[in-house]
Length: 102
Image (cartoon, rainbow, N blue to C red):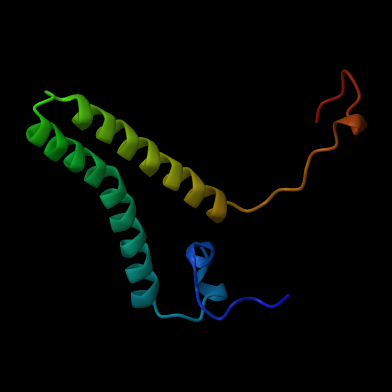
């Protein structure tokens, strides 16, 4: 399989020696990612506020929107960190002997 020509979120964490793009291009991609996650966290709460004001439901939809937005934002951050972190080989616990330091 070949690597796709376009750069996606998986390429965000490449080191300077591994990325042929300019520093400005890398910074703009990070800025775009941060803004997208921020918008994902705020917009559901704003929509909930709007729904509450139209329906007269107090703060029910505001709270549901904020809960959904924060959950979505945290999920995206976790996903981003999983894409950025290097994969470590699994530890073979059968080689460990009791009483011996690792």
